[in-house]
Length: 143
Image 1 (cartoon, rainbow, N blue to C red):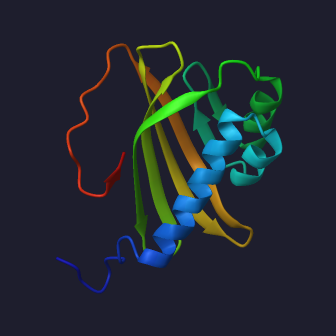
Image 2 (tube, rainbow, N blue to C red):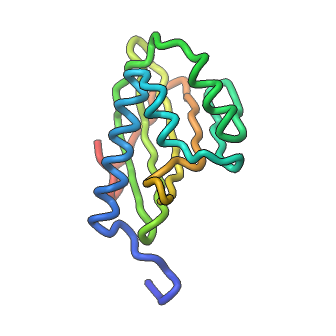
């Protein structure tokens, strides 16, 4: 039930904006476009990224990680993506993926916020599970 304090969920124009930002991020990630990845993270000490093997606090730490990361082995297949927007300025994006040659399923979660510069990731988390996870049908999910 929606009341006056509950934001509208998945306004079509806002959802389209976040889907476009997420697609741009995905392209930059698999093609190691470090400058685009940097642009799409909020330049703030409050930004964090928990990676598969690292915990990064603040934009400078995230930038240093990206600059030092190998460009090898970045290709992946996205299995499922769920993007949800809340009002006009906040969204979450979650996806499951597999790296080429791996049977592990990766999971990526991002929190996006509209800033004066556009949509930016303010928090992210990447993790892996050993076996492929079942992906039951979920409303709003995009294969």
